[in-house]
Amino acid sequence: MQVTKEDGGRLNAFAREPRMVVMAQGEANTASSRVLLIGGAVLVGALVLLAAQIS
Image (cartoon, rainbow, N blue to C red; front, side, top):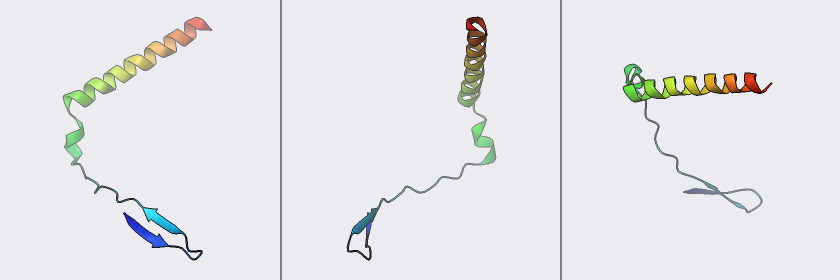
């Protein structure tokens, strides 16, 4: 942790963050991400239908 001292004598600690990983453009089109996308769309559709039936 990096610690600095402010003007008033207080200590201010900054967390050390992990390095960012830059993904290539084609890495996001895997089977698992496609399954999650389809599952999310089905869930949203089911919630819209449920809300329509309730109201």
